[in-house]
Image (cartoon, rainbow, N blue to C red):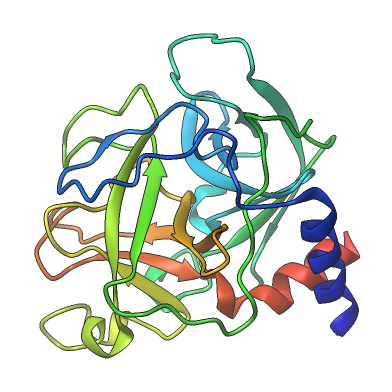
Length: 262
């Protein structure tokens, strides 16, 4: 089906994507750091009774997140969020109308892949300097080994540590599949439909699930190349166990078709 892919391209061209009004800090710090407010304007907080996961605004009424995040019946997304404990003014809270989990997702086997879901919002977000769209990669697009990307979210600051109150970011260099699939790394758990990133002192952690792996393209725009999926059970930043993301470029046809049909 070519039409949905074309429609996605048209939406991106009309609305613009991947160019924040507030430029993010992109220093190569080893440790994670608090993000500049509104510098990742496509980042959303997914909330039921409390914040549970992250996600990415890809068109004004659609959010990309992880399938394993969908465990409750009712959700809302909050956009233009920075400090979870403060009402800062620009936040937009929108209820989720439909939750569409990838048909091959198996909740009993996260490492089997397909950890991706789409959320259709009850109304479109208002695009502003603080709420913008992330770009989607082309189907099959690849990332270079050691390419610098950034994970963002409100997850735990370290294994067993407190949840972050303010949006955090961490530099996670991409680990090529040929490395990540080696036995001393993730082995057969690393699929070609996944992206590995990190593996040193930094990683995503519990609560970051569903949020974006932000990678800057050659055109200067930011692309959501990954959806935060899983980390090692022994700890968030276990050496040679980089954070594993669902590879968005592998799922562009499903994303396009699902949005077109709903």
